[in-house]
Image 1 (cartoon, rainbow over the protein chains, first blue to last red):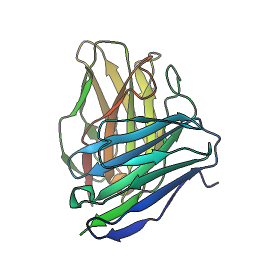
Image 2: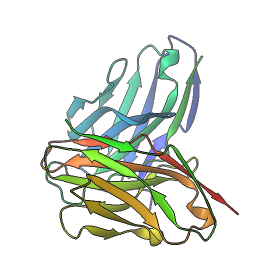
Image 3: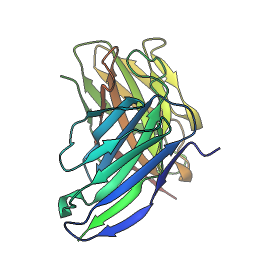
Image 4: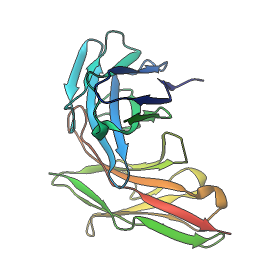
Length: 116
Length: 115
C-alpha cells in the first residue's frame, strides 16, 4: 500500500549543484503536483502535470524543471541550486482535476532539501 | 481571485477540551473547501471536505467543519482534544471547475495539546 513515494527523503547540496527529486505513485492517478513548504508560508505549487507527457507551471516555478515521461512518475529538477531553494518538497497526486468532486490530494512524506 | 486565511498560527488546548481552528475564505465562485492535517515529518492527509452538499461536514478522527456562506467561513472543530491531534492543520479552497489546479492553501495552524 505504497501510495506516493518520494526519493530521496533528505539531501544536502552546495550552491550551484544540480539534483533530481523523484515522485512515484501507484494509484494510476492522472494529476501530479510538486509543492514546496516553508515555515509560515503554507504550501506553494511549483509545477504540476495533468497527464503523461504534459507539465505546467504553478505559483513558484523559477529555478525548477519537471518531467512526466511515465504516468506513475513525476520528476523535479534543480539545475543550479540556490540557498533560497532550501525547503521541504512534497509531491502529491489526484485522480482527476477540473470538476473532480473528490478533490482529494494524496501526498508523499516529503523531501527535505538544504542548499548551503 | 481566491484566498484563504487561517486566523491563528498556533492554537493550544488542554487534552479533553474542545478544539476550534478558524478559516475564512474569499472566492467569487462556489468553492470546494478542505481541511488537511500534517503530523510531524509526514505528508498531508485529508481530514474532511465540503463540495456543496451538506454544510456540516464530518471527517476522520472526530473532526467536523461547518460551511457558512454568509460568513465565508469553514471552521474546524472537535469536541474533545486528544494528544495525537497535535499537528499542523491546513485549510484549502478550490474553485469548482477551476481548471487543473485551483487549490489555494492557508498558511497553517499549529495545534498544541497540553496534557
